[in-house]
Image 1 (cartoon, rainbow, N blue to C red):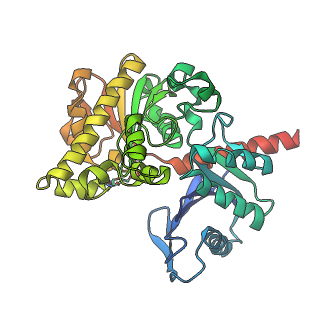
Image 2: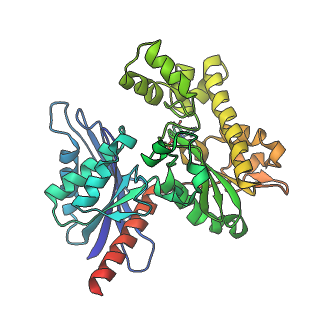
Image 3: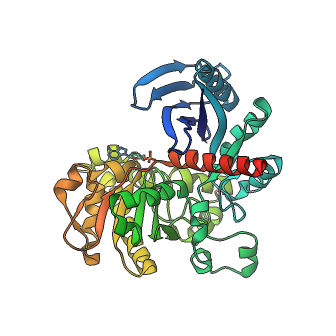
Length: 402
Ligand code: AMP
């Protein structure tokens, strides 16, 4: 019987899962991955093996009971057909916010869960959805160990100054500071960089996580020293539908002059801005690239995205005191040849030179010449959650045994 870990990443209407074999001493090994989407309505389930072949699919009608609880219980039932071979021993959850208190992954009990619920105001659009499956599992599968793995934790190595806003001191005391996100992705990239270039892994590296959410992280010797996201996941780069950094004065204008409610303003900034807002077409880079030649609005959205990435890289080069390497990851970073070429094209001043053929074939190294190097490194946030979950479980078992 192989013990397995379930990794869950819950959104407002989706539940992504991966199942890992846990073999003593070895890296957790992916067995199945899948998702539920459209939860609360006409939901869909699909599960694939580790090679990407679909094993099973199912759809539900809009009138069916298809909330997160129904999805989780469906997953438990689906897994039970393998109960002779594999036994779930723990669940690892992606949780967006660990606040100041949680700088490492944590085994969840009632008191931890209450402290995580108290962080909902810091990430109101994501934290409640991340925590809902933890509550459901506590109720429906009591005794199942659950580990919360945080998007913020990787950035807790940053200096006080790097995390400080120039706001009155009492606001800092209320937790208003830069936290940073996408930490599970940066943790993964930092952990594998030595396999690409051992020297670089110890150096000054900027990682560009460019997906539907987008941010940059400045690593020194594999440790986060600065990042573009701040108090919320809105800050920094423009994203698929999020605005990135805007002057705070814009928000007062929206509230006072445009008479938007805080909820309406929030929805504009999170859901109607970024590539979608500027182009008026789509949040999907593939769609924008396909239209860029003939549609000036698509071109403008892409140009702004690239311009902001290049400018923010300049800021992080200053924070790092130089640059040894640039790494592209996530949906756009791993797949969009043109975005990588345009960003590197804007960094000639920093000594970066594109290797066009290597960029077209996906790297991993996509730079030429003797300056800083550029790389494509596919991210794997779920593997980091599996690693962290196993390590927390291992530590707990050791504590119990001693
Ligand atoms: P992620 O959030 O990491 O899943 O990334 C999602 C984004 O990656 C989407 O907005 C797509 O625009 C982008 N993406 C995925 N595949 C490609 C591709 N082949 N070319 C350009 N962009 C892509």
